[in-house]
Image 1 (cartoon, rainbow, N blue to C red):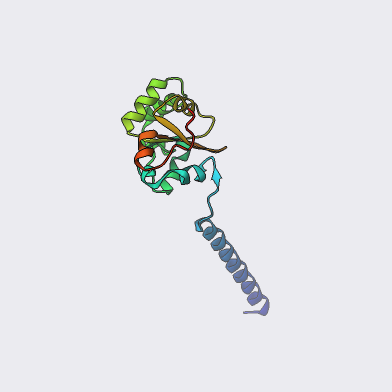
Image 2 (image 1 turned 135 degrees about the horizontal axis):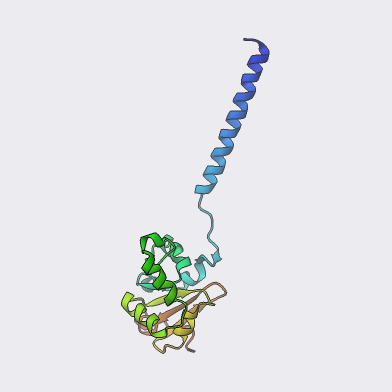
Length: 165
């Protein structure tokens, strides 16, 4: 083998090794957990505000935060994996959370056994919850609003953070 052929092979080996190392670095960066911010899809501050004993109970939530709830070991009412719920459930959910049928929302919350809710501030479900004397606005920021049933808060020895309805 000539020195130029050997040089070419070494050059290609260096290129291949460099590409393999680069690909490994990129792939491993995808698996390294990152800090989760307080964002629309991960309302950390809102979820952190809910007492653990209450967070372990059923929640009626916005579809977009379902995955985050799962990552926190909280069973969501619904999440974005709509294929698991079926088309009729997805359609019913979107019709429900448009907030126009207050009684339907309250009936679904009762049916699900939810003791807390988690929705973005602009969602009409919050307006419905604000009118319910049995519910307390426990937390709210620019990302999410949490309502908790008053009796559940009291049983957990917590006071309603915002007694105004």
